[in-house]
Amino acid sequence: MTYKTFAVPNTIIHGEDALEYLSTIDGKKAVLVTGGSSMKRFGFLDEAKAQLEKAGLEVDIIDGVEPDPSVKTCLKGGKRMEEFEPDWIIAIGGGSAMDAAKAMWVFYEYPGYDFTKLADFDNPALKNKARLICIPSTSGTASEITAFSVITDIEKEIKYPLVHPDFVPEVAILDTRIPAKMPEKVTAATGMDVMTHAVEAYVSTSADDFTDPYAIRAIELVFENLEKAYKNGSDMDAREKMHTASTIAGMAFTNASLGIVHSMAHKIGGVFHLTHGEANAIMLPYIIDYNRKSCDKYEKLEEILGIDDLAEEIRKLNAKVGIAPNIKEGKNTVISEEDFLNHLDAMSENAFKDACTLTNPRESSASDIKKIYKASFYGEKIDF
Image 1 (cartoon, rainbow, N blue to C red):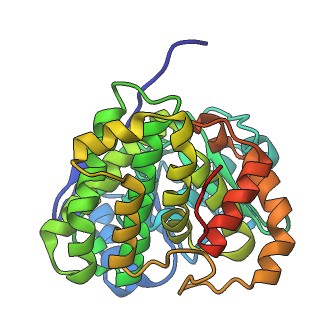
Image 2: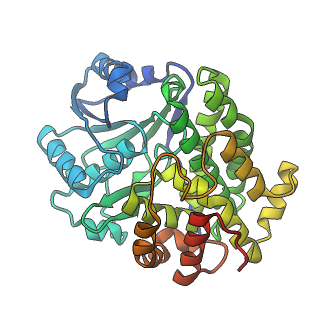
């Protein structure tokens, strides 16, 4: 197959009070899928429920989705949906809630579907029983716009990136009041996740003239606004720009795919629960240095941005928003050298097999990935 596709949600609702859109949808039943308590604590879950009831829908709530949603959680959610029979599935929260809702959707429409088939991209057609709306609480994962979902097999300690064209939501609702509640460290980690999405999409072997403009603009917006949003969470202009950056980076990477930054972040996150955004942020500059030997698009990007060294500018931005320069010095998840080395070979093999490796601009290997892991753990320069 030589042709390509470019797919985004049919409708994107954005700006303050965008949640009001829920009062306009047609249907009989809706299920809200959410994570911990933040959406409830800040009143957004109740607001979403009220807007849906205003539209005449009966509403059920599936809450408690964990930060790295497990296969078990998704199977359980699918069972709940099977009993309630919603015609709308509405995810509200961070990437975990949105990712989980997508997998639950499969298990709702196909009870007992084998997760290993999903992980191998054996995707059954969806939208037979329900349609999907995603409402992100963070400016980072872009799951509200993408065909991706990341689900963790706890027993195997592996995060699996699922890719299903039907996972692209029917509607994305970007209400800028919601991410304004994010704490500093979440703002930083999710913001650098946006940067990673955009940079990897731009240099992906599947990038093209449809995806590049979105990736470039997202990179510009992160450089211009992440530090502002981090230092002043109530700066609504910076918050809106970061929310926009997240979504348009998602438009780029859901169509161009990603690279080994994500392959490696998925695997180290699955083992050590290093947050996805922090793992991406730390490893991105190391992998830019690694990929340069086979990719001239970094130079083109530097010309557009008016900078000399993209990796160095990302290191500076990481420092400004409180992200460590290497994994060993990470502030949010402490990983011992002994544990890291014990898992290194398995992580490297699994990262090489990750779907995101396929579109990395430099042809890689498990041994190269192992070297990059070690460099990003100890803070060593990439010179191979």
